[in-house]
Amino acid sequence: MGELSSLRIRSSGHGPTVVATHGLGDDLTVFGDLTERLAESGFRVVSWDLPGHGGSWDVEVRSSADGFAALEHVVAGQPRPVILLGHSLGGYLSLAYAARHPDDINALVLLSTGPGYRNPRSRAGWNDYIDQAARKMTLAPGAGVLAHQADSAVIDSLPGLTVPVLHILGDGDRRYRDGAEYMERTLPRSRLVTITGARHSPHRTHADVVAKVALEFLSTARG
Image (cartoon, helix red, strand yellow):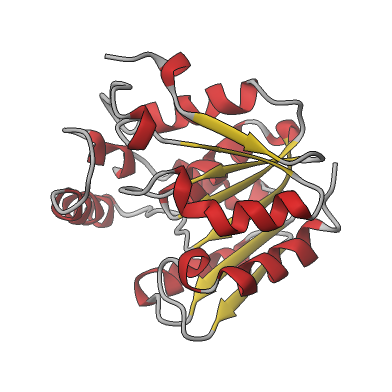
């Protein structure tokens, strides 16, 4: 199996670095339109494939911790501080990274992201849901475990995250609505933007709107 050095990583543009992390079952190409707009607007965008996904298919996945370790590896190769952009699982990993390495981060842009659960039964229910959903996705065997939640570390860390946070959510994304509203109330410097007509992947269906909102936010968060 491949090591973290085998992760597929691409970069485009010049300027402050944005590390873009996709969600479960996707790959870096999901950010194509958004990456292009950010690069054209003066940012260097580093997008990559999670282990067991896309061009990182052969990178071994043993537990949910492997996703975080992979993000650490990608950020370690960049000039810091960086801006983290993440969709769904990618947003969750970005929150976890910001909590553990706050000095590495200028800002967070979250797309359709939840903060996890404190209740162990809720986490178990989530993990069961992920196992079922992963069976329908194009993933390396066992890679669905990347989206498992082992503890409440991310949601517990929210009050201490002082970096500016933009969270973009589709108004049809009911599964993530409560978590998004909770984060807006709990994160010290958070803004939630809801996009009409979008669901769980607004960067796919409403790329122009997402880019406009993200660029307005990032114009104040350049490193």
